[in-house]
Length: 283
Image 1 (cartoon, one colour):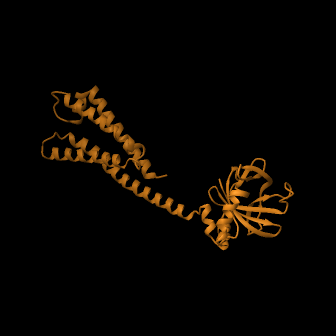
Image 2 (cartoon, helix red, strand yellow; image 1 turned 45 degrees about the vertical axis):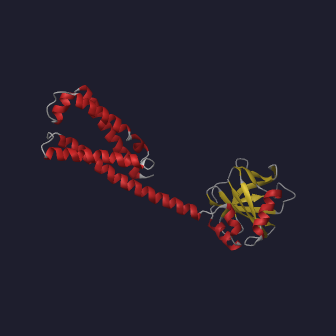
């Protein structure tokens, strides 16, 4: 969370409430307000009423920035200007004896809020830019399923080792078979598999089993058990996909997988003791 943005919002809302309070007092007790703030004589309250109405409408334009300063940058900068510029005119007006000394109080209030807002706004936007850059850097480092078809087997293996066990997935996933990794055949075999043989898995986490999804009608078949255990490819735990107790055809097949990005799993496929291929699953 951008802490600076949170504080910017609070200060803006404080300023809005201060404006509304001034406007309400100007309507209810205009003479007492002018006397209290030493704004000079009040022969007619018309100007104060008009000023208060404009102040309320101006404050309404602050509200978008008070909620989402990073999305309403123009509003954010304008509300800062709407504090600092009037405050400056109050200071100049008092110094030139054009305005009563009481306007110094209004000027100090507006200027103080404006300075705090501009500092927090600069820090907010700087932090936001930094977070966006981090997100972009993270996005570029997280591989996509099709990226693995361009990798060598050694690169895929390293990616698998860096993965974590994570939580056993649940529901439908889209899969890509990786056969003959690092060769020109990888993409061709992945496409053929997708069209005719296999296109993903369906997991039922609570009952600890999964089914393979077969094209072209997404038929669910070839049940297997799923659990966490020690993987054979490298040290550490993996999510094991085991057919030994559920399928005669694939009795000797065992798969293990790890999560290499949120909702993105990379798996090793073994027939007996021999590793034959990889695949990815995306939820």
